Image (cartoon, rainbow, N blue to C red; front, side):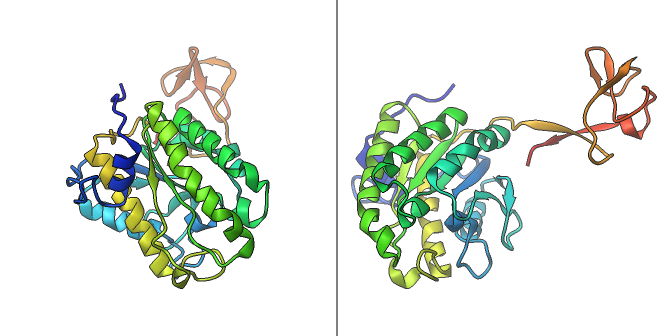
Length: 292
């Protein structure tokens, strides 16, 4: 059962920035909740422009680990030199393209924290910029429906030197707190993370941060997670989807020849088999693995 707690927009936004409405740092997070974090977005999530390929993910991992959280970053992609490089950062993707894959990934991994930085390619590519914020709102609603126990941290877009993006970025960023406010009013654990601390000096190229810029992004996401923890939003991750894997590559689970199971793994009273009759051989020894 999710807690029914909806803070004001000002309270949560200022907490995500590292201060409370009274201008003091938020209370220390409990730091013991296991975190299953899905970094979700485009090439900035992937880490283009960083010297290690880790982007903000590496320094964010380090900060959360130092807080004491048991950690697991999740996603279908792996990139960078960090020990846990799993992520869902797809270079070149727009909001609609992330939306097309989000349900499957969120359902598979069941994160309890999603860090979302998306929209750069919509604006830079001049892809229907007037409706980009509507697509973002739809994506936030989609994420909270697919992972209802997750805290979703929605970041503003970082500065760029692209004239195309910059003509739209201010209006896009100004809409994000309103999207967050609407989600909070509906009882969802969604928070705004302001990336305005990055300047053009923090860029490796036209669009992507350098190491200093990614460190600033990590700091901002870290403050957002701390604020969510202090607010009591973070709960233990829900059980992730599991898959059943055989030692024989490329084989599917099968009730082969309708043979009666004699042990091993069963389905409707039959033996799950890579090939052949039920005999307890290696082709019928299956291992349950957490998807990750």
